Length: 104
Image (cartoon, rainbow, N blue to C red; front, top):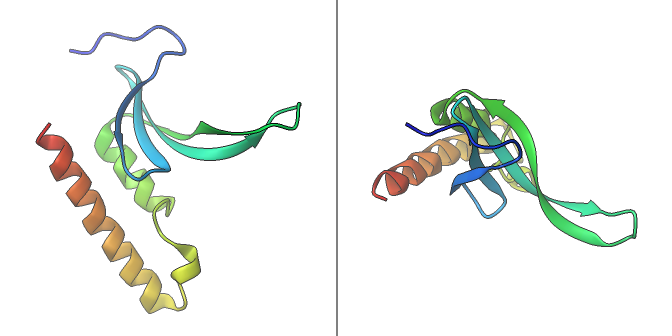
């Protein structure tokens, strides 16, 4: 059993894409994080992981990735049919991510 981590400590579980990952905060909290550009007060632009949702378990977090359309390329969506195709591809992609991570 995973012990609760100290406040502020995160354990990345796996990357869904290069810009989206699933992270464990403690025994009760899983989050989806997205790599975003952040402009500091100094004007420096950095890439940082931003939490975009908390979930009770990995399965629910993966459903959140789908619900939030985090790996759908909106530039490629031209119609309801192309959106449906992207969603189907997204679900198949996540199934493959899960299979790969089970082998670890």
